[in-house]
Image (cartoon, rainbow, N blue to C red; front, top):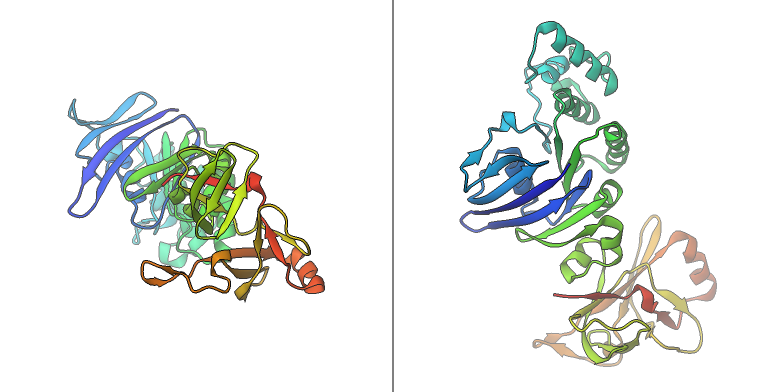
Length: 361
């Protein structure tokens, strides 16, 4: 199944400009709230009508401004799971699942029964949505979607309204229920962990546009630009001054970094993930940052340390007329905390040059 989407739509204070193609079965769209993720899904579903462009699924045209094609939502074979599940409150579980199915009563009843069994809803057939737990509502909504065998399923922040325990459990349930589904699933989320576990291909959105794309694991390893790095969880950034093909100055950190690989000429920033620092006790070596603790925060499963940038130690540097408050985050997981408790704080943090992210704007 191939998706080809090129659309533009303008509102008063927001513009959506989306262009992507994919043949993946599990697609993730990652972005902050308000970046246009849900509007993208609604355009695919036919809830929103773009101002221009086209939307094609496996060669079938759902929307094309030039040819004036705009299939109605009911004819698009697209299943849409909303954040609030959008169940009909005055219908029972079995009535909700049957809604939209066509055929004789016997065939509809058979299909509903199949979905009841598949999604673990036996015994809840006569219950109304308000009598169901969050997980049961979600399974009912998925059963309703799967009942009419859509070609594409759209998941719009499906776990955002759930508490952490329920979220993890339902996420696993949903993934298991979708294992046998042969169509394409597109999930949008602002949660990088959800997207990472779910998708094989990832599109990163910012301000109505796709700013990075690629295989999910590869994009997390090399986000390509600063916006994508932030959304995939990187905490530490510095603008850079190019020294030579293997040396850069990290301006905000106050140190020079040497790399075996060639520094990309178009790189404007470097990023470094908070868990990747390696503590060093003793003599300073190459690519090391002096450890000077500013503050810390203890969490259930890790300790977060906030380190002064090198150019701030013993100085009162200013940036745009204000004191430079650049801090570097070092997150230490619980199994590594014992070493620090025994040895005390390290003298330096070593930056593994292989894990430095070279980034565009």
